[in-house]
Length: 203
Image (cartoon, rainbow, N blue to C red; front, side, top):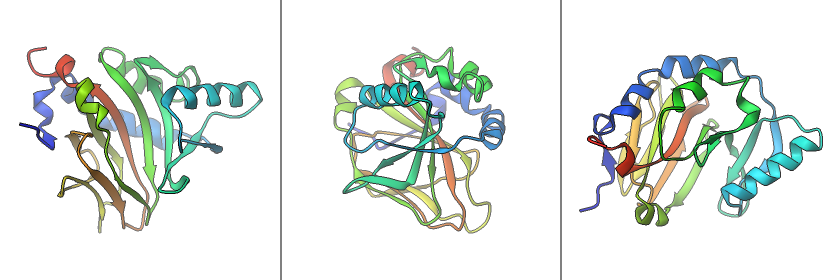
């Protein structure tokens, strides 16, 4: 039977990683990265990586890129890629060294990024059906969000979870899901796609 949500303690390595959220948050708060003209709309991870490489070789500065929306790039949803296919981005070695070191012993990471949803922003309903075929799950580790009147929420299959600072949510991305942030401040998570079987208890 498919489940929408999983408990963090079912994945001991991720539980240990999430326990260091304050360290990751400190690096996030110290990050001084620009918003680039790049975006994720209509592109695979590999295509995004190639575009980033070309942008950097052309003199660009590594930074945040817009995610996708219903009809194009979504400037309210910004992503700062850290790692793809278990390989860290060479451009974040100096900006997020402690986070990369914490990620290093975790196998089966498909992708990992910092993801900010601006105040009043939303990510429309979507699903990744291929995740179920490949055995992937998603982790949202909340690093920054409103401390009061926090209206940043994830909905998976009709069930709500709040993005509260320090909280970790693991869910099945093959299910329909969407995110809203009706708070007055931005919400930032560490987003991680991982192999369920490789990281499950007893693995």
